[in-house]
Image (cartoon, rainbow, N blue to C red; front, side):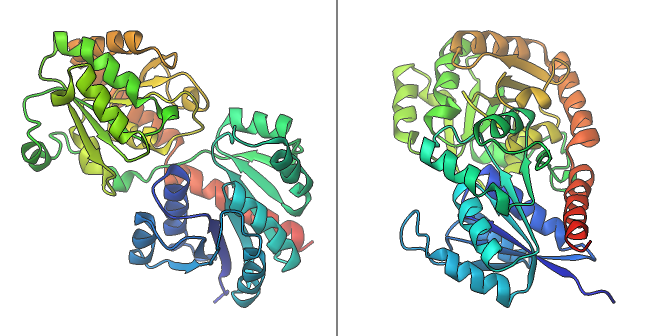
Length: 374
């Protein structure tokens, strides 16, 4: 039997987030591979996805770092890459990408691939230049949306032949549809007989949860029993709770916190919102559409690559008055909303499942290895 090649996924942490969820999902898929064996290396032992990965049987290693940009992790990485005989180093997010490509080159790792999640608008000129100067160490740079690919090409000056767009994905087996939703969940949280609007997001300014709360003040005038369910944590939680009190909708908002099992919550939503000012290619959107949920989302980043007028409604960001209007329309037209949800599921099936996307990633791995063996 041909020996499997070891792939090391390097990421800063396995706490909540789309990039972390993507790494976990991809590693799970590769557990079934006859050619590759996945290992995850995290620069932090904390996080719900860390526990999920070990529970799934994935080897998860922790690399100690003592401060945010601790470059001495490079030496630990070099040893790890050599000890584990890593054939492919696949890094995720800026810091891991940076230390990984340097360590990978010094360890003579055959293939180094970096995935860029998000648009990294926070990068200063020094970080952009550092990114550009170390691109020669990388075989391929994956972006998850067309706009992210364009930004990397222009800003970091990555050559066209090095860039490849491969979208995020969702495993439909993990998001099968229950038509009635989770009735126990509805009962436990007193959510029966009410229109349920859901968000799965981080509570920071970019995600614009505040727009949903402000819009809700208008929506409750037409639908007094409506509930906005917010799944996630973040620095603005207290501020958002105060905002719901200010707008008189505190009784209509449920802050459910971070939930590792998003499927049960998604199953009870009548409508899904994603209101970011900036976005790349959100996995939460794929999950909601896989559960046949109609969506209202902002027309930014990679979102238009997923949502068209057939699957939901796109709006400009930071427009709570327009958002309220569209929510009311959705709730007044349940049959049209249901048709959008069905169309969304078909879009996911045809374009963004593990069965569609993972083979693209595996093909990339094979092509990069073959190029090194010429």
